[in-house]
Every structure is written in C-alpha cells, then in structure tokens.
Amino acid sequence: MPVLPSYPHMGAKESDVWRAFLASGHAPAGDVYYAARLGTPLPWNPAQGEYMRALIHATSRLRVDAVIVAGDVYWLFEVKIRAGLSALGQAMGYQLLFEDVVPGTANVLSCIVAWSSTIDLPPIATRCGIGLYLVTSKWGQHWNEPAFSP
Image 1: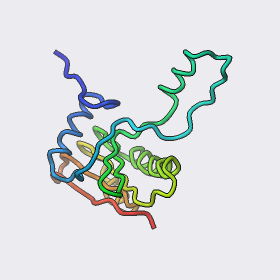
Image 2: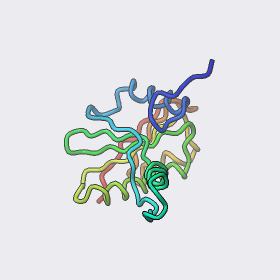
Image 3: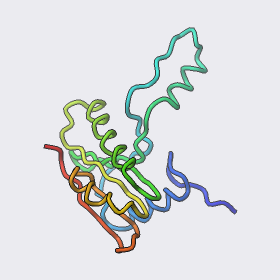
Image 4: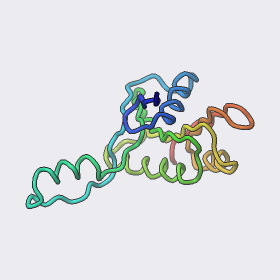
C-alpha cells in the first residue's frame, strides 16, 4: 500500500522529513501554515474565463513548504529529501518574496530541512544565514541556526 503525504504540497518522503524535524525539538512554537503562496501570479484576462482564472490562481505562484509564525518572527521552511544549492536558492528567493508580500517584515528566517545534503551546502548555508536541519548524514543530525539579514 503506498504511503500518502501528510502535508499540503509535500510528497510522502518530504512529509517524513518534516515529521522528523518537528519531532527534533528545533521547530519554533507557533502557528504553522503550509504551501504559502509567494511571488507574482501569471496575468489573467477576463476573456479567458473563470476556469482559467481559477487554474492560474491555483498553479501560477511559487509556494514555500511551511511557514511558522512565532511571535513577530516568520520562519520559512523548504523541505527536501536531499538538499543542494538549488534548495539554498529557493530559501533565499522565498525570503525575498515573503518580504515583498508582507511589507515591513524585518523578522524573516529561512531554513532548509532535509534528510541529507551535498557536502558543500552546510558551510554555504551558514555563510548565507540560511538555517539547515539534516535529519541524517554521514556525520549525524545537523542543525545550523538561521540568521537575520543585515
């Protein structure tokens, strides 16, 4: 029997990664939102009809996997099975897009949560201020705290 995902916009394996992170004690306490839409939607022309409007609304914007609102801090999470530089780019881009959607938001932290990563990702994520939680790797569990942008 196939394993079904438990969280919106995450597959079954990503859901397992997210559950492991939530159980780790590193997740901040707060309200959790899934598949938060960010970025600019494709333009819609009323001549395209309501079906196309609904389709564009449902599919044309980027989605950050999870957002936890803890007090006045917004934590953005990108969940991967194996993270590399593309996950870093997503985390950085989502942070900038979130700041555009919620103007004046200074307290935004971006994190990547994954089973494992490429060998170069942890030091680069640290230098970029992106949090990184690895459920497992050759060196065991790993947690880099995210940092606020200057």
